Image (tube, rainbow over all chains, first blue to last red; front, side, top):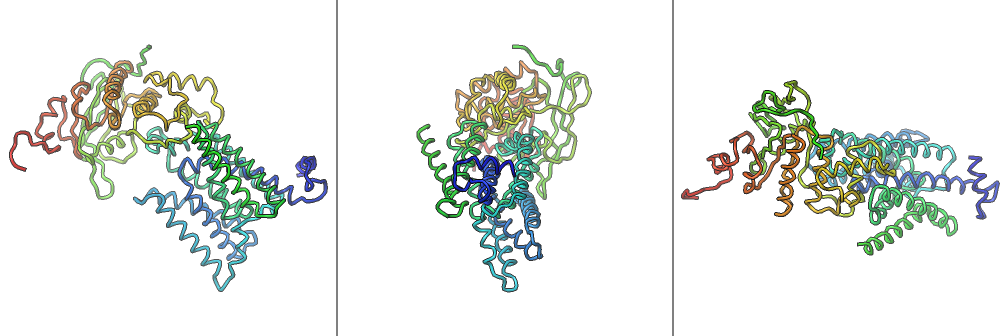
Amino acid sequence: MELWYALVDLLPFEWAQPGHMFFMKNALLAVLVISPLFGLLSTMVVQSRMSFFSDALGHSAFTGIAIGTLCGLSQPMGAAVIFALCFSLLFTWVRRRTALTSDTVIGVFSSTAVALGIFIATLNGGSFTKFNALLIGDILSVESGKIGLLAGILAVILVLWVCAYNTLLLSALHPALADSRGVRVFWQEAVLNAAIAVVVTVSMTWVGLLVVNSLLVLPGAAARNIARNSRQYHLFSILGAVVCGVAGLMTSYYIGASAGAAVTLYLALYFALATILRKKQL
Amino acid sequence: MSVHKHDNCTGHGCQGLCCLELKDVGVTIGADELLHGVSFHLHCGEIVALIGPNGAGKSTLFKTILGQLPHTGDIQFQRSDGKPSRPVIGYVPQSPTFDRGDPVSVLDFFAAAVADWPVFLPIPGKLRQRVGECLMRTHAEGLLDKRIGALSGGELQRVLMALALEPLPHILILDEPLSGVDVEGEKQLLDMLDEIRQTYDLSILLSTHDFATLEQYADKVILLQNTVLKAGAPAEVLSSAAFRQVFHLRMGKEGA
């Protein structure tokens, strides 16, 4: 962290003066870790048509935190991660076992998770307002230890990508073909869903439930409009996420709006520009 | 072009020839008996066409041979030296539709399937060259940098077929290769199948609804409706009573 502070102090911003505004410096570092993480996952979420599923996962993360709070845990994140993992694995399994389409199964899971979350949160006349922070999230509240955790998750996802990107891609493009080439499609889906579940749950406190899904969908969706192969797809998705992440944080600092919302609006702008570019290209 | 031979397949009959043998194969999923008593041989160098109405179990049979479904009965593969072994099977799925906007090039798709190098990183020249060489087998090397969503039906078939030939299989399975391909594409495809059979000396099993061209390329036709109703030379199967009955052709008969 000392190294990071020393680096930021070189920046020509008023908050970058040495010795104060540590929350802003932490937030900037957190954004630089979270945004490539979401940019990376986003490529596969969009490729596998899981935009709606990641939304459901956000809801399950909220339910997990509600359960953790009910159990009197001061740090409900552990419980939330476990709940989200169970949720994603159960979903993967049910989707395979039933004849229903994916969007229907997601709808069932999502609404159940939200209902359970609200039910538990309001049990014994409890007030829902204490969960409001989770809906919007606050990147400025991030502590240096948590940034380490996020960096660890980023490293794990990077390793997963290097080891399994090819089989994940093949499973998403054509499950039967992947199967015929010895890829265990079910486990590919399970691992990917579990990875998304962990990332969504852990980052929700800072990013916010309402914004987390846009971070998982928009970078990939925008990059898809202009990329012609897997390299460009990843480059545009990650770069877009990082640029919009930093821009969103700065905007929120200077005009005082929610950082998560500002990031999302920048990403939406990126998507719009990419869509226009694509029209010109075709 | 050099001739790759995985096995030395000469002679006739199952002896001394690599051969896939199905003996009394049955598949039941839940309460539905999808296949029962399916028996046939598939020899190296043969093109066998599987015909039958929709729901007759053609795709189920493919999945069973690919080892994706539990089955009763025996499926055995014998190499030309008579030793049983696990065959390498190349599978060409029914013409899939990819998103037009999929940011996946033919190179990405192919490399993801045949190599360990993660394709989101810059692809080494060696791998690119290897994929190009594989695509040459079906004259598709020019498609390397095209997006898979932008390929025509015939182009996609060629890419999928090249993929099924890497690693070189003993058996090539094609699920309705002629659907979604125009007349010109159909001729090219059939010529290519013949070329593949001659060059690589493998057996080809395909399903089709197109009976008109069967006699041109198929050595054997199998009429399937949950079990083998009729098997033999194309002319023999197409003129059989079982064929007429399955496809409700009432040739010269009166009444509804």
